[in-house]
Image (cartoon, rainbow, N blue to C red; front, side, top):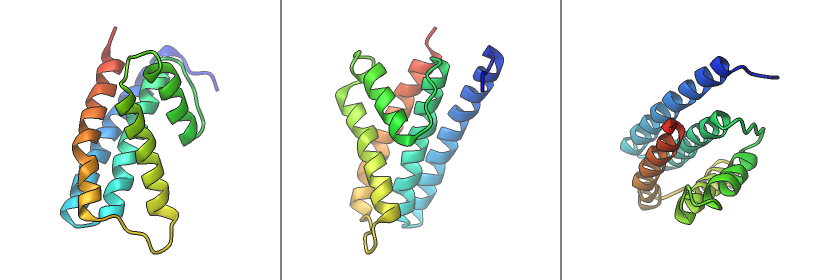
Amino acid sequence: MILGAEEIQAVVFYRKERAWSTLKEAEDALKGAHWNLAVQRMYYAVYYMASALLMKNKIFVHTHNGVVGQIGMRFVKTGKLTKDEGRLHTRLLQARVTGDYNDFFDFTEEEAMEFLQPTRDFLKRLEELIDED
């Protein structure tokens, strides 16, 4: 499927909005002591914003690992994002998979809360890159 400039702009706008609303869902899950859900929602918040950044740059990927890989190759390796930001993205993906698929595993409050501020900061940085130009 080939998207025109206006369609890309609309999808990027939508994904940015969805990223922030998904972070709000994570915050609500934390308030309700739903640690696995909170980590999952933080991952998806980053996924939506990262995929918006890729789309804005006409980089189209079809998998979660593809998003992580392209962010690493196009933005971490080029210095537009820090290695710590790239590692956070990878850690969130791994945490989401662990929380969703590993039997008898639950995140603790401390583990879930440790992701919150770095996720907020990473979303802001990704949005800055989207809004450049």
